[in-house]
Length: 427
Image 1 (cartoon, one colour):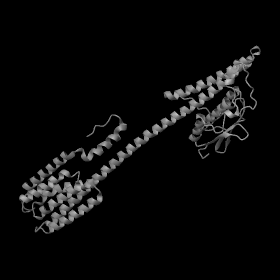
Image 2 (tube, rainbow, N blue to C red):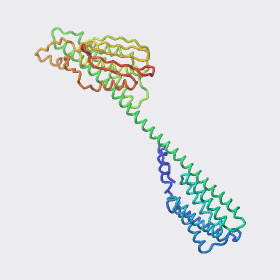
Image 3 (cartoon, helix red, strand yellow):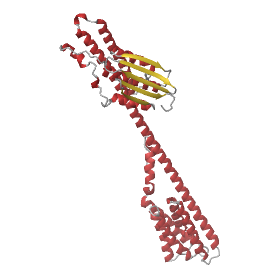
Image 4 (tube, helix red, strand yellow):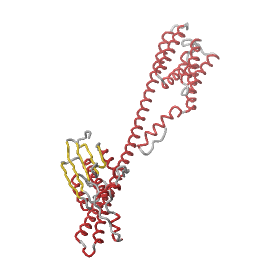
C-alpha cells in the first residue's frame, strides 16, 4: 500500500499512481499464489469429497484437467478472456466425464470474477450466458438423478460471481472518476492561482508605470520651469514662480511616495491596503498637470461608481494627462468624465503643442530648458508606435469590460476616449 504524503494537496496524485499500478501491483507472483491456493483447494475437494453422489473420483486425465484449470489463473489479470477460455476448455470435459463436479468450481468462479472485473459488461454477460448454456448441455448428457438441481445451483453461483465482479468493476471505475475529478480540480486551482498571480503582477506593473511616468514627467517639466526662471533673467528673478514650481515638485513627490508605499504593501503581502484612487482624486491630477504648465478644463458629472471602475478611470486620466504634458507641453486639455446610463464615459482631449515656440538663444545657460522644451508637432507622428502607457490603458479598460479609442485629431492635438460599463453590462 503506498504511503500517503504529508501534504494533502498531493493525495490525488498518490491515489492516481496507486490506481495506475493496481493491475500490476500484485504482479505475477500474487496471481501465482492465488492459483496455488485454488489448486490446493480443488485437490483437497477432489480428494476428500465423497464420490458416487457428486461424481466419480478423478483419474489421471481428471487430475490433469483439474490442475490446468487452476494453473491458468496465473494470467488472469493480463489476459482474463484467454484465461476464461482455458478454464472452460478444462472444466467442460471434466464435467462431461462425470468427475467430482464441485472440485472444479473454485477455478471457474475465480476466472469468471476476473473477467467481470476487467470488463466490459457486454463481454461478461455473453460469457455467462455461454457458460450456462454449455453447462446445461453437459449436465443434460450426464446420466445422474440430481443433474438438474446441480445445474441450477452451479448456475446461481456463476451469476452471483459475475454480479460481484461487475460491482467491483463499477466501484473501481467510480473511485477512478473521483480521483480524476480531484486531480482536475487541483490543476484548476493551481492554474487559477497562477492566473491571479499573473494578473496581480500585471496590475502592479501598470500601477508602477502610471505612477512613475506621471510623477517623473511632472517633476521634469516643473524642474525645467524652475531652471528657466532662474537662468532666463537672474537680475529680475521671479521668486514666486520658482517657489510654485518647487512646491509642485514637492507635492508630486509626496503623492508618488504615498502610492508607491501602497504598491509595496501589496508586494509584501500586507492585508492593510489603502483605498483605490477614484474619481475624487482626478482633481489632484488636474492640479499637478496645471503646475506643469498645462491648462486643464475639468468636467466631472458622475456619482459614485464601483472601486474598480473608478480606479480604471483615474489611471486613464492620469496617463492621458501625462502624455499631454510630455508631448504637448503648454497646451489646453479638456477632461470630461460623465455617467451616461450604465456606462462611464471619459474623454481627454488636448490641442497639441503651441504653434509659437520661442527659439532658444545661443547662450549655454538655456540648454536645460531647451532639452525639455515642448516638441513641435513633427515629434509626435501619427504612425509612431505606442508605448507601454497606451498598452496599459487598453489593458485597464479591457479588465473592466470597456472600450478605448485614442488617436490624433484632424484639427490638431490628441484625444483619448474610454467607455467603462458601470452596471456590469456591455459598454
